[in-house]
Length: 420
Image (cartoon, rainbow, N blue to C red; front, side):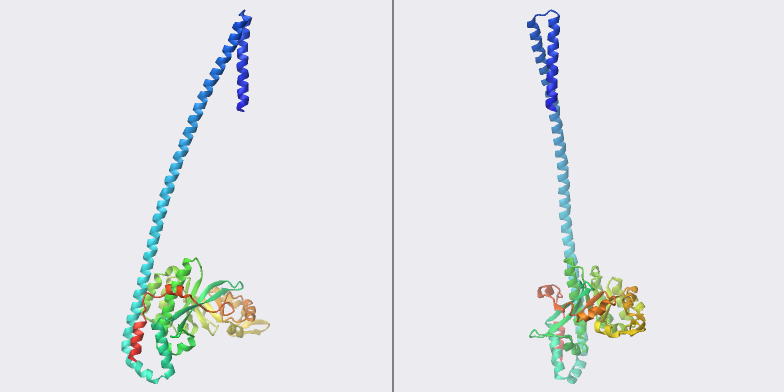
């Protein structure tokens, strides 16, 4: 386009010079004068063209410079904004890190205060019960005395392990929850099953200490999983003794209030018999935990004829039923499959009935694939058992991060043992 314009202008200049030369020649001027006029006119045209072109080029250059300056100003403004944003982000990260550190420090202090209170109460209780304990120990068998000493030593030396068993969704079998279990180890490192130590631990009130230690660890494990964006919950047993303890529970409630962001991830579990035995104190304390957003589960269910309204009022959101127990309850009447304890209800409608009250059924102790076939026909949403995964111990490195800040059982238990 530019070349075409230049060609047209050159042609116009030649035509103008030629016209002037012809006019002079027609008026009688000598040919030399006409030629000089032609050359002079052509030179003036090109000189004028050069001046105009230079003017436009200068104007264009100035416009380019102004554009560059404007772009430079915009770039500086953006750099300043980015710098301000980076400064704000660094300050925000620093403040967030400081806040997290303060929260962790507060949590540790709360846990220390709670455990210290437990220690003081246990010492006070032991002081008043030593005489009675001495009388009781004379009536025990030597084997019971040995097992009690093993349990006391395991607690004093913090040989209490945390085991987790997966709870899966059905039929996908994707892990959505875990149930926590405590296991004690003797001095040789042998893991003791609950059946071995419950007989001596429960009468001596040691299960409260085991359960409470388990609760603390569950909270810490859930906190660790939450940091890894693993959205799973943990079922953690809580004893009636802990719920009924007016001295311990306020401290424990304060600890859980500091961790109420984990509500929904920590589910407290009671056996059906324990739930039925709960009194007004235990019910009130369960309600206070529920007010923080925590939920409850009922396990060891041996009777499916339940008061679902009462369970819903107590914020029970899960119901664990043994797989074989559930299947043994099924029978056929008038051509339909029903549950023996609920003969007016179709077996396939049981899970739908519990869901109307906000309660999900979990079939536990699933051991074989043949059980799953019948369970799926009942529209039950969750399963637990060795078929989906056995309880596994948490790694030592992870468990170490979930330890209480001080060994709260050692001193009291040793004094109790020496008093006997």
